[in-house]
Amino acid sequence: MFYRESGDFKKTYQKDSQTFPIKFDRWRYYFVMLIAFVVVPMFLTDYIANAVMIPFLVWAIAALGLNILVGYTGQLSLGTGGFMAVGAYATYKLMTAFPGMDMVSVILLSGLITAAVGALFGLPSLRIKGFYLAVATLAAQFFLVWLLNKVPWFYNYSASGQISAPQREMFGVIITGPHATPVAGYLFCLGFAVGLAWIARNLTRGRLGRSWMAIRDMDIAAEIIGVNPLTAKLSAFAVSSFFVGISGSLFFSVYLGAAEVTEAFGISVSFSVLFMIIIGGLGSIFGSFIGAAFMVLMPVLLKNVLVGAMGWPTDLAAHFEYIIVGGLILIFLIIEPHGLAQMARVLKEKLRLWPFPH
Figure 1 (cartoon, one colour):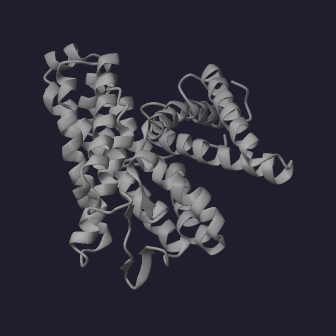
Figure 2: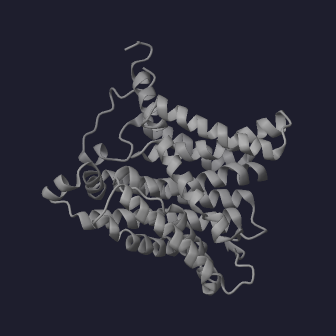
Figure 3: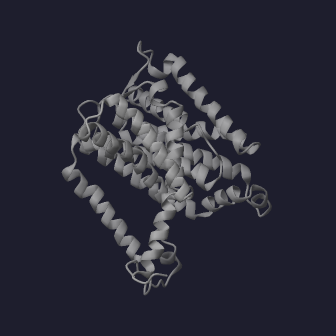
């Protein structure tokens, strides 16, 4: 009985409804936070930060946002890359127009701007759903990328069409620009990832989250019992786009530093984030992080093995990376269609009864 629930009693409704009601889960969460905020920065190198940790946190936030829309509300979206682009370009315009504004405010405002855009493009969900809604959000992806690429005002009339993040500081530490340190960028992204995961966890357990799940399971029945489809669907699009916009903002300002919309936020980005939540598990906060970790770590691991250890040419290894990652995705979905989060739940059930077999 490695995973213990017995003897963990609650005397108030407030303690019973807390985010981690089981003491073992709380201590496990505190331990992970200690590792993430204290231990990892002590051993963080430039390569680990830029190739693994920062992209993992950025994609985890994007996966959280899309999981709210697809996993919890049942509204299929293929416009994640476009909404990330809105967040990135909103950050660029705010950083250049208001040099004195702190980065936290810039990123939160970028998320709010993206939320407004996402709610606007979520209006078709009131009339269509399923494959037709996916096509509508795919059209939003292409339209947003085209708009940000063709209107010079969005990139301040730059001849190259690129946007570059100016240098910004927080508490005297540089977090954006060419002189930013990897530890500063990692901790900045980690703070947003932890905060947004906590918000998502509480939203999905509250009244709004239950209305999303009611719409997902059967929208007609949800409307009969009093759930407003307009409020539920548009709020899901807005909250999801807020998360995705923050992800795009961090992706541009902290990770890339410079971006061009057609290359950095193309349709492949939308599919990658969708694969993350499918692999991790739809309707699971934890699954969003697992899926992001899989999609970020697996290509890095394969590149180190194929190129570094086996000495393959870089172009040949890149092709095999796509083949191997795609094959692993298919294998995982065949073994467990509900994602890696379901595997973690099954493992937890086994640990409850260990060492007994049933």
